[in-house]
Amino acid sequence: MKLKSVQLLGASLLLQMSASSIYAQTPLSKASLQGDEIIETVYGDIELENNFINKGSDELFDAMDFQRASQAYIWSTPIVSMKTWGDREDAAYDAAGLENFVVLKSLKEKRGIVTGNLTTPYIFTFSNLKDGAVKVDYPKGMTAGGFLDLWQRPVADLGLTGPDKGQGGTYIICGPSDNPDKYKGQADFIVQSETNNFFIGLRILEADPSAVDKFKSNLKLGKVGTKLKDASFIEDKDVEWSATAPRDLDYWKKLHTIINEEPVREQDKAWIAMIKPLGVEIGKPFNPTARQKENLMKGLKMGELMLRNLQTNPRFSEPYWAGTNWYKSFDFNIPQANEMMVYLDERAVWYYEAVSSTKGMVEPSPGYGQIYMTSKRDQNGELLRADQTYKLHVPADVPVDQFWSVTLYSEDTRRPYDNGGTEIADIGINSRRKDVTYNKDGSIDIYIGAERPEGVNPANYLKTVGDDGWFIYFRLYAPREAFFDKSFQLPDWEKITSGLSK
Image (cartoon, rainbow, N blue to C red; front, side, top):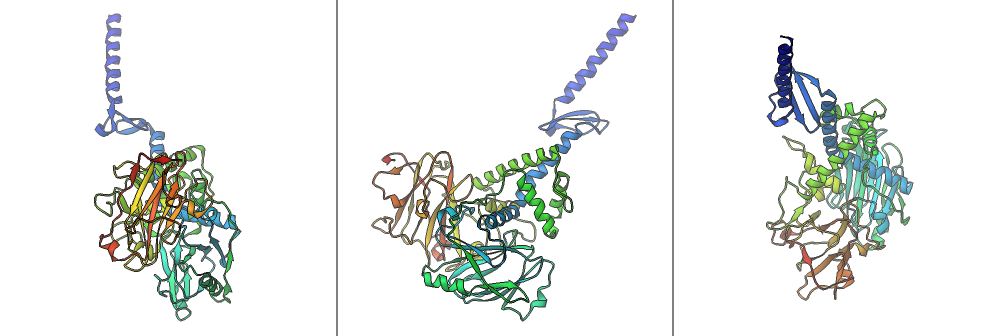
């Protein structure tokens, strides 16, 4: 009898083990989430016992924190990128202070900016409105620029696309907790930023040095209620620096600084809740545990991979010209939201790949603003490679009132490409250059790649190196109607397979 009892008990145990084995093989997609069940997930096995989580609690918390961190990276990319830019530029140029504008001219200087424009000088300053509104006496002239908040949204355009229409005027910009009504009558234009951190950036579009000097000598600014000061211009330092957002814990440290400096907007409250368990919290120091660090780093890297994928394969957009691989870079509006949603992916892709936005960039119209076209695939739909060479045929009569330009960027840093060149001409071609060769019909062929084709003018060629993948922006300044009605179109890149020479 004892032997028989042991045999029965053994059989019962085997049946139980068999049942457990069946439960252990239940994939998440087929789980009932009821009773006793072992559910297989990519984060580990989760065991239910009488519907309770019996085993796998830590795995579920890790999954939650990893997912939230990866999505929080996408949400926060605009503000972290902007804050990184300001902090690193101030450090590189010793430029902290409202009146101190950095002027970037050389390739080395401009190579610091994410997808910086190489054709015209940049003039920038970063400041804060927490201790009071700022007044700017903005000069007349052909300029393009604006006030931006930390989300890189234009608070107001300046110059040709701004309310002054290039005629100049006085502006007051106040912070999110201030009341703009109290400044009525004290400036021509009064605007309010939703963030304390703000930015003033502009480009002088006139090439005449005297026009540049005149503009700079007439730009004045200061806190409202104080005597305005002449702007100070820090230039010709030729400093190497980088505004690319960090890929380590400094990213989250930067975000922690931001959320403790800025008021929380209604649309961001859920995100603030999601990053709190990760150690990124308002009112507490940033001191994540080892577990939090692990999830923050995994989330950051997955978030960047997600943005790279959207950048290369923008599922929220279609090519601007049918049958090509050319996309118009802006797929969102100035508020970055509509009545139904925030343009979460659209804005994140742009601010991963670039910086800043103005009305002229987001909402150009015939004769005003700028267009940014980009492509990352050739005529066969294959990704552009650094070890191959390609040709872009630019038709004659590009529809612009000002000029067009092609600038080469690194897919890794998203900053101007470092191919060993020291001059802007080494990574940029534009319609103002006199050394490039045009075809008899007025069109121009531009070559980018590892080797310059035989017989091609070096001025028409931009070199790529190693495995540093690349992309370009084809910019149109003051685009004409032919761009908007699509009667003008760029063809795809053509891979060159013969006639190459070093």
